Image 1 (cartoon, one colour):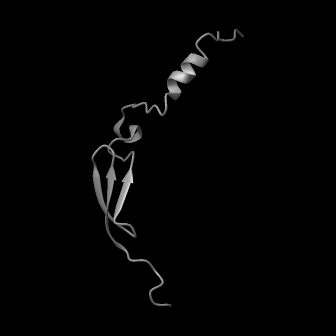
Image 2 (cartoon, one colour; image 1 turned 120 degrees about the vertical axis):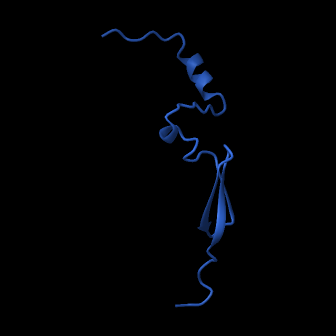
Image 3 (cartoon, helix red, strand yellow; image 1 turned 180 degrees about the vertical axis):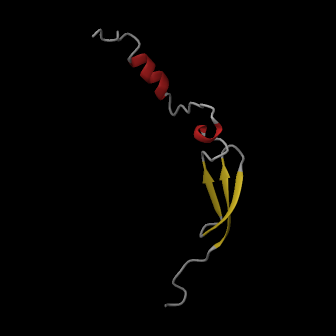
Length: 71
């Protein structure tokens, strides 16, 4: 095998937006994520609606006057 081919495998910290930090090993020293297992709705059982750029309000305005179809 060739020498100096693989990157260094160092201890790193994964930091979530909720403040949770996870220590692991990676080729990067700092990794930032928006959602982790401590704040994700699947693991917590709490539904948290993340509205990006007002998309929920845009959807509600678009379909506010639309009546449901009768079958």
